[in-house]
Length: 88
Image (tube, rainbow, N blue to C red; front, side, top):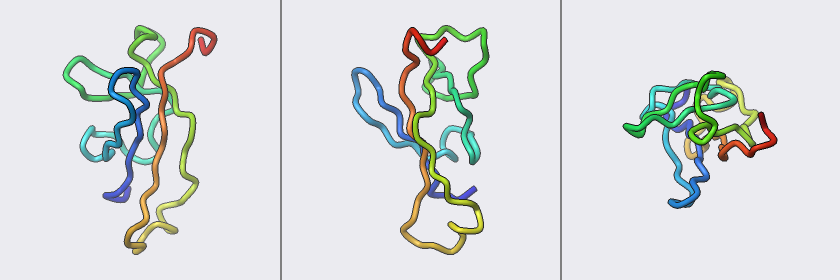
């Protein structure tokens, strides 16, 4: 995992927030669905989590560890949005 790896959260009331994976304890590649915990931390979502706190990945960088190694100024990211009712 590169230190610059990040996730972008599209939050309803706060807009977009970019967060480094290392700051929330996730590694690359991040999970397809994440759960936002009350303390602001994130974890991989499970089927038992309330949908209103689950976000799904809608975009994911395709750069590999080898491609990003030694590249200054390059970051790979994943973008998330809240589940929609039809996402299940």
